[in-house]
Image 1 (cartoon, rainbow, N blue to C red):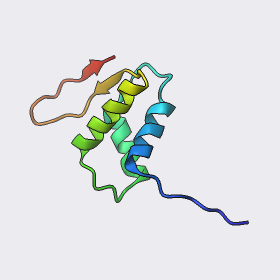
Image 2 (spheres, rainbow, N blue to C red):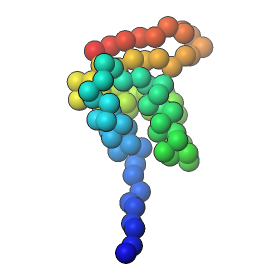
Image 3 (spheres, rainbow, N blue to C red):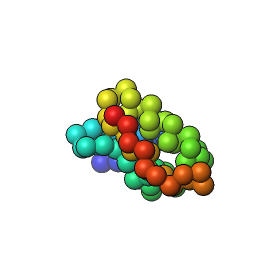
Image 4 (tube, helix red, strand yellow):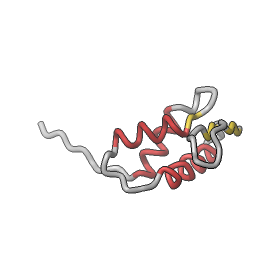
Length: 81
């Protein structure tokens, strides 16, 4: 028996993560980015690009999103639904 795994894109990983969290209260962008980085350690996409990608998928699937990544500009959590 042969086990074959196909390579997934970062977009597919973001989509899968959002869909797996669709039943929760909201999606934490910080947790999503950590999960994607664990799944894809060689991912060259910036955190900001991942944040935008995840937000777009959340909008498509009507999943509330928490922009909870601390930046130099702000440390507050932004919640959007």
